[in-house]
Image (cartoon, rainbow over all chains, first blue to last red; front, side):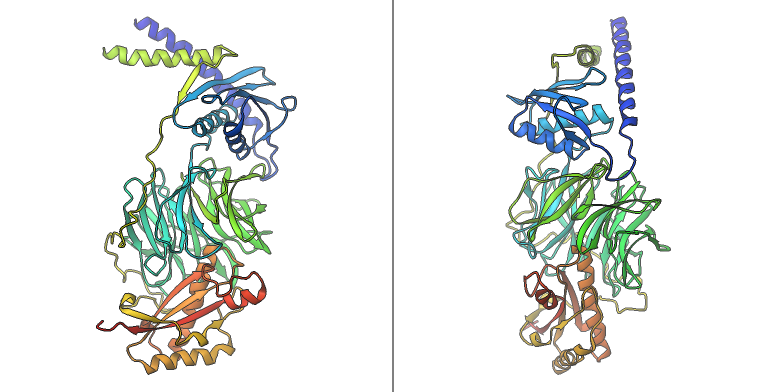
Length: 391
Length: 200
């Protein structure tokens, strides 16, 4: 009996080693050179119809693939969505089947997202984002009262979280947990609430005189950075997850939109310096403010630090709003990518959720920053904005 | 029994790995997708009050000594809003600015006089922006506009403790239009006189 286990293990490990080597080979090929100018990976799709095809195209487009004919493709995806997703992935150049699988359970959409994740993993070696969630703000019109919603990252399966019919703002996830912080005017003041999505319970975290908004949860979930005006101007403050241990960390004339570095040591935020809008960072425990250069991207606001620490996405305003991304270390100037605002990084540090104007309303959209490809989320009526990607 | 429990799934997993890598054409591996995470739960829509949560110390932050801290010791729910009294004294701002224009001095004086005339009255200042800024930037700018009026009123002799500020950012336009005429009306501070509720 033992012998059989050992021989099985040996063969298994050999197989794992082989797939591992293959994944590495392909990684080198998709190395990033210039933000927004990376060539998408050509892939073809056959056999899928309706929802299955739609989900696969959405997920893979916003993770750097482009759909081409099988002649022009490096990777061939074929399969079927009849009675469940069944599919295979072939590397045409290497003449090798990388993946051959069928899925059951949950919904067809979930199965298609899972297949997309497996394709992303097989080709890039990175974990896919197909089964992740976003929270966002939805309003019947472009301004005024709204509610907080949670949905799949592509906008499907949207579920209303609040029922206050009040102005809401800036939902933020607790890392790794089904829980949100957000701003609500439900009590006639912009206050910050914590809301557990598993029990429905919520709790006031910051309700000081004046502004209480833009909660951002530290990567370890223990601290909240936010904007308060209790000192007489809108500044960044930090407190414990339950609202205690409050400490002011910035003292500018007008500070907004804090975001944490993934190691928890810095807070990047939007500020005004000599009456010009700037991005800056400050040690999370307080200290000297360092202004960041955003040459070529005027009036920066709404920074969001990528989970891998390498990038800061933000919105610049040069007439219209534009989504920009720059290296967090400032080594190269920002790239201006597409029209839109409120960028929020996906766990993969290459895809952004954002919102963009269609007429006078905002729609949620998802952008692959390396190839500049984006797709609008499932359309809801009214205006949807301020997406926050669960990480 | 215990060995079987470990060996059997292991053998299955390895067989599946071999099948995937070994066989080129036939899909063999089945990945079950379970119902996933628990679905998000709504707040109870029938509950009119929020869970009060932990007590929060309102006096914890350091005072920089520059601007006037916003902490006020009174409860706004004990006051009635009189939106008409000072509706004519709304002040307007230049684009992306929180500086109070010289031309608004008469409005600031009128608001100060109204507060001088009613010793028990208090004031709510609502700061607002036009739509040409990002949401949270505008929420900060609207607050700065409200706080600027509060400072001006303090200089005109009104105790800042009688004043609360609220920023609506671009969420409460006076004119929902999308041109300079509308934007000019929307970059504003509205002054709302607060009278004590009877018996409060």
